[in-house]
Amino acid sequence: MTGADDQNMTREAKIRDILEQELQDGEDLANDARNMIAYLLREKKGYAPVDVRKGLAFEVTLGKETFWSSADFIVSVEGRKGMIIKCAAGSLDSRERQAVAAARVITSPPVPVAVVADPMTAEVLEVASGKVIGEGFGAIPTKEQLREILSGRMPQSLDAKRLEKEKRILLAFDAIKCCVPRGGGGGVQIGPDPPEDGKVHG
Image 1 (cartoon, helix red, strand yellow):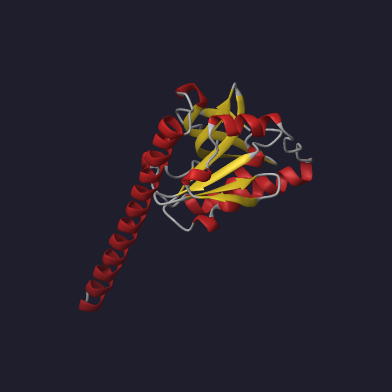
Image 2: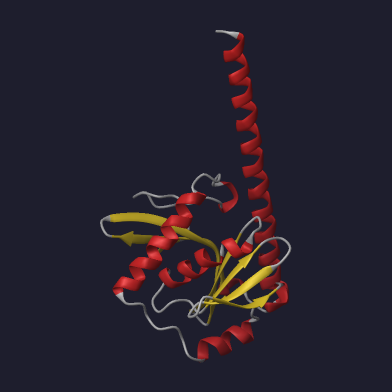
């Protein structure tokens, strides 16, 4: 092995270490966001433990293929799913479309509210329009507010063509996320083997 080969191997090892550290840092920030959201829902927003499911994975079928997607939280009121929350390390605007697609796919008719959050802030989206309707942790609906939303006009069920489009969008985002370690609820399993906990069929 030549000196140039040694230098190339050393350079590749350093790059790999940097990328692994960046991935771990991102997952740590996402976990911080999950902890913040769990605290807010329980202590500030009025939700009971039975209202909140954490680390939820759900099966999505697209043609002959099956893949798994996930939500950090699904929030219900009196058994009705009302809000999906996805946590990230940052750049929330890049995750808005992913959260909306997940809300449109996870159940029919779609969940009406989607939230993306990092440790510093959150964005609340109306799933029917895909528009941001609130910013900051204070904008996340309380239990009473979500109850009012669920009692109003709900999003319409998607036709088959639109649902397939939303599944493809979700798959594209999740495929990108597959490189993220699955520790702490990160990453997404793609394939026929279901995750151990939180299985929901979409």
